[in-house]
View (cartoon, helix red, strand yellow):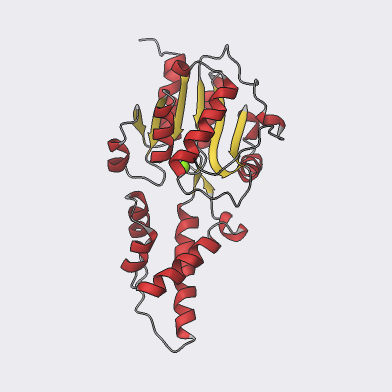
Length: 262
Ligand SMILES: [Mg+2]
């Protein structure tokens, strides 16, 4: 049990159960952070700013910390290998109480509006969604990000109308003691509402939470390596398929509903 509750009656008109077209050949449920949006710059900027803040706090007390800032490549590689934030802080030169201060700072900063603006649409996403939509495939977003935020971002990019369902967390402050359990719960709710045949439903995501949630529901899963987990890590989870990004996955999925003639 996750302690998270989701609204039983979604207020957004896009998020009405029953709008999924059962005659459609396929439904694709897509995670938000990772497959659609690149969060790596936000996470790295958060890391950098929190290091500076921690350093400044100790400097004010006359203590100079031997901080060694990681490059973005080093940082993101660690995130993709699931290196804990405390370990990342340790490898950046911080120790004990300094690490605690750093982690508190990261937690406070990462969802601030100025940093959320660092998020960018992943390359090829517009093409991917257009391709899937043109093939008559139902598209839905299933995310642990705040639902309002996800809707707003997709609206800003002019992509919200492509999705029949956008389902996320009820507010920005939703806490997840266990991401996988939270995703499992949310996915089960969305699938119950959609009632699309599991054999024709795919889940696209970038973490263990996505893959394990899809597997628990008996639907096919595609893990993307453009997000916050490495290909080595994702392989261990044995998703149905692994693709580098949503466009690559979209080409594969569109081929299933509209095979290319030899
Ligand atoms: Mg994700």
